[in-house]
Length: 157
Image 1 (cartoon, rainbow, N blue to C red):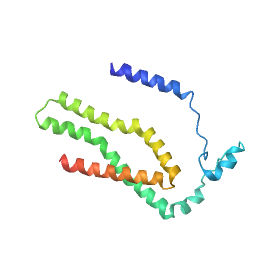
Image 2: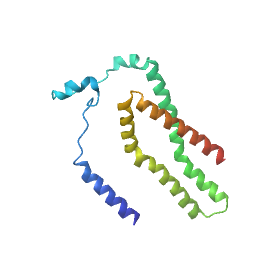
Image 3: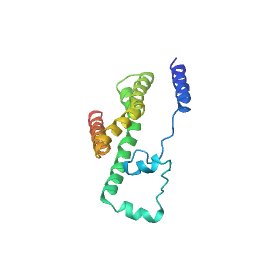
Image 4: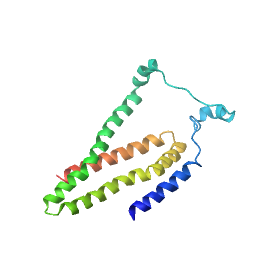
């Protein structure tokens, strides 16, 4: 039954795909509204010789480091279900029970993917209120994820 349910959900999402408008680059930027209202497109691309200027800005460098360490934190989460399987088996449960418990953990991780669209929308709403909206939301959830990872590593040793 779960495979049939997921296939129906996938089919509905495929149908929705045909009715979704592709977002235009720069459409939400206030500086480009006049350009977009006149029917023109914003198609600027960064060139290789501009990369040093971009990377040398402090805010971009800090965002790069934040993304680097965020990838380490989220990348390590994939190993937690495997760790749980071995810990559950060490407690004396069968491998079948351990795999079922780890599957629930994988399901919990998938909730992040399911809710990402909502939190993207929430970030857009916050961005309209203040230009710090998306960065504050990202900082909050990055800190929350870091605390969660530390808790899991300390609690499940």
